Amino acid sequence: MSAIEAASLRGTQPLPVSERCDRCGAVAKVRAVLSNGGELLFCGQHARAHEARLRQAAVTLESVGATRS
Ligand SMILES: [Zn+2]
Image 1: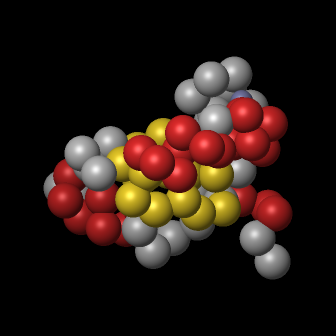
Image 2 (image 1 turned 45 degrees about the vertical axis):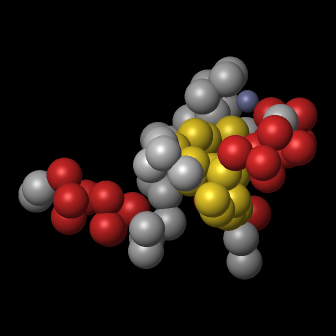
């Protein structure tokens, strides 16, 4: 699978459980896609802690994992 294919799949499929918070390593609950194409993952605790900055820096913020019904 090419990197482009992998990236497009990530946009349409739920993240696997192996996706972890970049800060503490807990299971990620929020994914932030940045304007430079970067991507950050946060657990619920760190998503709240960084929410204000994320909303300025991120193009999209979306919930991932088990909290989405
Ligand atoms: Zn965390």
